[in-house]
Image (tube, rainbow, N blue to C red; front, top):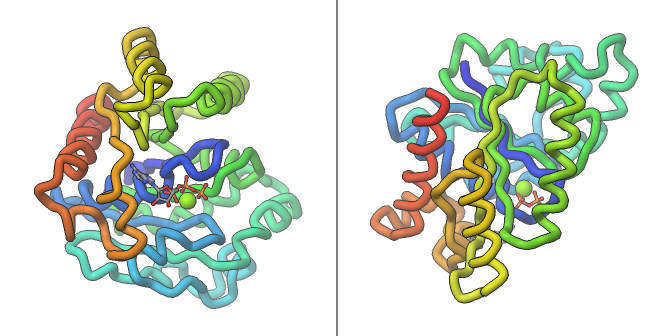
Length: 247
Ligand SMILES: Nc1ncnc2c1ncn2[C@@H]1O[C@H](COP(=O)(O)OP(=O)(O)OP(=O)(O)O)[C@@H](O)[C@H]1O
Ligand SMILES: [Mg+2]
């Protein structure tokens, strides 16, 4: 099972939106795909029309009195399942800190998904925390959505420094620009300069678009209500670029 984490220290950059759309693109290739909504805000669960809440909350995830795979929900879309968010996820760090190996807790939890899915997508909350270190430790491919602004690049540089400090994490990184407004000169300058100078950035960018924002009203992946849109084509092309670089 390959683990894709959609993460950024910065909030509101499109982690959840990208998780849902990229995981859908993965599932539509006939690959069994699970999304774990790790954010207590539960936005992925909302987009996929599921209530948040898991029996026993984080305590049960730690003790695994109920096997985790029993809490997986079907999204109704072929090959795409969801492990929902829970309000208690805000206590992940507290629970992890009490264990002997605080940075290995998520790895243990994910174990029960390994033989059931080919790909796992983690929708991550923002911020640097014990949870984010647990996430980075298990991640194969780190997808980092960024809005093309100087502040966003600043938090990206902070994340890169953090990753460099932990070279034991064997992850591959694909940053990409989201919410790109071609009429905004700062966006134009940042995307052009960065994509030219830093080949690690995906060539494909995702536009700022009302069609994408409408996911909050439609409560479904973009592919369901706008399959022929240039926005969904951009998502598919980004996904192809990710799997092309890291098959
Ligand atoms: N490409 C886009 N075009 C227009 N709106 C977008 C786009 N991507 C995301 N949004 C909107 O931006 C807002 C933030 O997106 P999202 O919730 O995916 O970010 P996030 O990084 O997951 O936020 P958080 O840090 O709170 O988890 C949402 O209202 C979403 O609809
Ligand atoms: Mg989110």
